[in-house]
Length: 189
Image 1 (cartoon, helix red, strand yellow):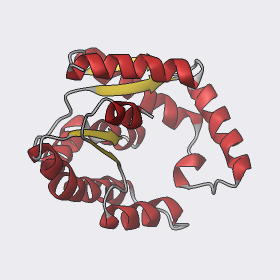
Image 2 (tube, rainbow, N blue to C red; image 1 turned 180 degrees about the vertical axis):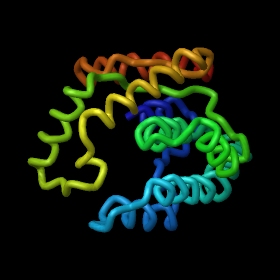
Image 3 (cartoon, rainbow, N blue to C red; image 1 turned 90 degrees about the vertical axis):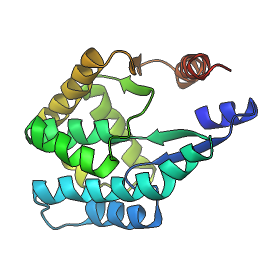
Image 4 (tube, rainbow, N blue to C red; image 1 turned 135 degrees about the vertical axis):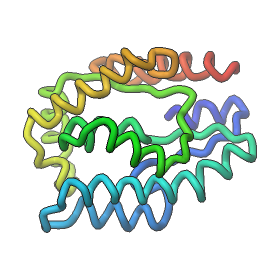
């Protein structure tokens, strides 16, 4: 929705996602999310790092080099939250892996749509009713998601210059309006 509104304003946008923003990333995403095999936490961390390294080098850096605005659904903060806090890796290890995968490339602006864990789990359960296939991350316990949410809020506190927390409990059209105003103001349109 954001990319569409910014394109309508004449801004050249690359809209992407992690994991899965590149052909290799899509295969890695599928392998990770759809496997019935137990995935070792270190393998998970490195799998996401491999996807991110490919994404940064072959998609994000070239787009930025062309002067395009990049909107990515998830990036390195997700690894810090999910694999770091969620899986229990220490910050030094996670930050080293993130640094290696990104080459130090950080977003100028990060938006975190905050809802309670209970609301997130309810939304996940209700979305399964529309033929969505359950994946490995859907099976995590609420405690996992509490650690993840806490990690995101910690990043927001430490990096308030780039990180914005948005109340994700309201109607989508109101949230979208807030996001467009925030991002358009940030990039000066």
